[in-house]
Image 1 (cartoon, helix red, strand yellow):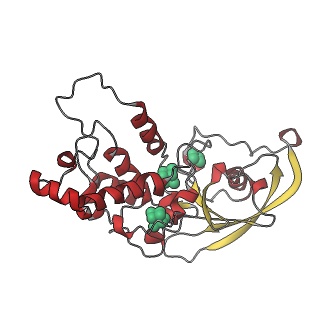
Image 2 (tube, rainbow, N blue to C red; image 1 turned 180 degrees about the horizontal axis):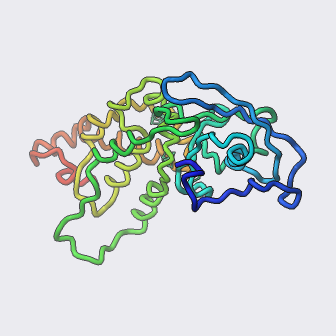
Image 3 (cartoon, rainbow, N blue to C red; image 1 turned 30 degrees about the vertical axis):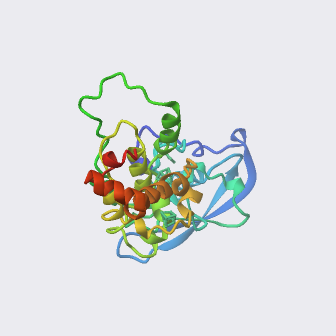
Length: 277
Ligand code: SF4
Ligand code: SF4
Ligand code: FES
């Protein structure tokens, strides 16, 4: 959604004046403009600096004062909705969480997420992620599991990290499997490894998604480079606390000789048979 389409959103930089803390500096932004089928260009804009401003403030200033046609998706301006993802100076980041005074001196380059199809300017089509999400069976407790549930604090603490995800898809954008190899049909991507982990580690869930995640989800494509973890604005340890545990569960199930014997005896390779929840 562009700012023009979002009447509830507010900007802090449209009426820049000294009372708002103008720094006296002029910022130069090189912002991508283009539509599908075009090569697009980087347009240069000059924006007055304001103390504490973030890159989204500069984009809003451009939209209101210099180029009303510039498209940018945003919503909360509080680093919580995950809408304003883009690439700032070549690195995936939230426009609303990136302060301009923390960037190196010189022009600031702002481009759309490279791993997703372009809609217009800084807006990309991230709907592929929601299709992936539909492939993952949702949380499914046992029908006869009495309530209220009692869940150990250590389980709650472990799951809380996964639930911090704001679905900004910066991790999907930076992952080389999706970005450089275009394996979006073969690899769920880091955000959805986090989702699977949150379900698999839930003590009240009864389903088993490990083999699905390895096969349809392409878990083996991940080579644990941790690029996804580095860009996550919620500081989720995507590789250490989601992908590696999922890989370990798969390896335990299929390559651990003791579990192999257990499977033979129980006649089932499922999570329930192994008691591995
Ligand atoms: S650690 Fe895995 S999921 Fe994360 S960016 Fe690297 S390959 Fe992609
Ligand atoms: S895991 Fe982090 S980077 Fe990936 S979508 Fe969630 S919040 Fe964004
Ligand atoms: S506008 Fe919501 S995360 Fe940036």
